[in-house]
Image (cartoon, rainbow, N blue to C red; front, top):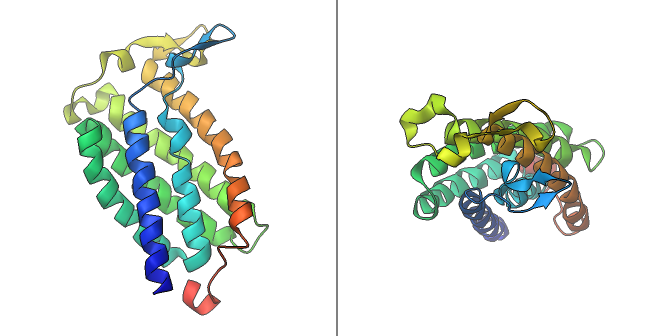
Length: 211
């Protein structure tokens, strides 16, 4: 019963993160810092999505990779289905594909490092998972190569300075991908704080059940 209640809670949290990030990724951050136009670099989704790795890692820590994968798949089904109502179909489909790949690699990395220092597993898993997720999501969402999946946003494929500091220009979706990944790295580091704070509350089950 404890496992069922915790699983339902984790699925609900995962669903909320997926839906919120899918919706917010459609909106660039407006503003300017040091002469750099933030709308060329960031979407609001980058600030929300890393929380998905926190949910996955806490599930993996408490119940092991088996139940962590169930939470990921449940979050995928519910979250992506709801995302079709809050975002464009191409965004929802790209998000689902990237989400599965990123979260499943996070589970594998976390599980292989779980017996090392407490921060290694969640940090390495989230960084590798974020890199894979960002590559897949922005490629499928905006790259002209995958135009058959749906219409591109003209704003996304228009050229913009890479990271706002290099003379070379690239499609804006590439700048978004790079900017979002940098933010995900930073937020991933910040997510170590709640993970560490919850370690005394979210305790692993006996090895025989958590394996």
